[in-house]
Amino acid sequence: MPTRERRRPRRLRPGDTVAVVAPAGPVPGEMLDAGLELLGRWGLRVVLGEHVRDRHPRLPYLAGSDADRAADLQRAWCDPEVAGVLCARGGYGSMRILEHLDWAAMRAAGPKLFAGSSDVTALHQVFGERLELATVFGPMIGTGAFVEDSAAREHFRRTLFEPERVSIITRGGAEALVPGRARGVTYGGNLSLAAATLGAPDTPGPPERGIALLEDVGEDPYRLDRALTQLLRAGWFAGATGIALGSWQGCEPVADVRAVARDRLGELGIPVLWELGFGHCPAQRTVPLGVSAELDTSAQRLTVLQPALA
Image 1 (cartoon, helix red, strand yellow):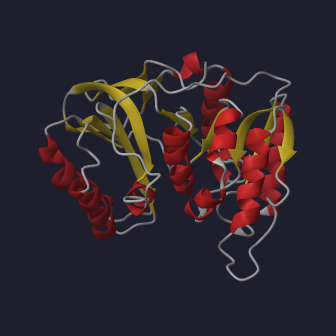
Image 2 (cartoon, helix red, strand yellow):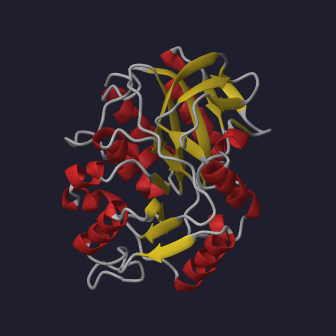
């Protein structure tokens, strides 16, 4: 797809109202309560989606019915008092609510912060396409990444309140699989979800000049190979100028994952940086999607040239 300017919501300020929704899997109650308390310490007023604590009556891996999860998201997004919508948890289920959302109404509600990761990749993609909105890929409120990991939580907080302070995303253990520098618009998220959503009418193609961001969790190397191969065959990297890979927690052996990444991506002729530290990992970095950035493998960093939040 052509590279075009994404709408950028404003950053958060103390006193803002944010909504917490559960678009995918069920949320542990105690973890959610702790996350909500931490948001309050940031000076935010929190509105909890009506169905966040639900569980689907027949499919226990879903937080309530598709219609109810979608209604929570749409109600929060269209509420003029809400400055941002934060996801409580991933798991699985975000794809299932896409057809239940009124995108025209959501676009009319104007740009606002949207944040989540993992399975929420499906929503990031369509928010970027239908709402032409820059979004934030980071820790979710009802998870240990937010509640128990102070480094991950602080990076997330600065991204939401002071995005210029986290314009350089780096990690000491990052490594160049293919050296070089590249500029482009960030896109991607979770590898399995990016592959699973291919072919849907509301799933965007790659930007003309894009920096692909990919991570995953709990997948065998051959399954990651399959997902990358599917993306390659579908032209998902056709406009990519560079690739930044995040964490691969539970994807073992990690040496095999690295070998898969080198084998599948190394011949694209673009810079590839291994393990930048976003995704399912300790001290995870929050990364914006749909913004201009520069990847520099020798400096082990991704520099955000335009913050996701204005």
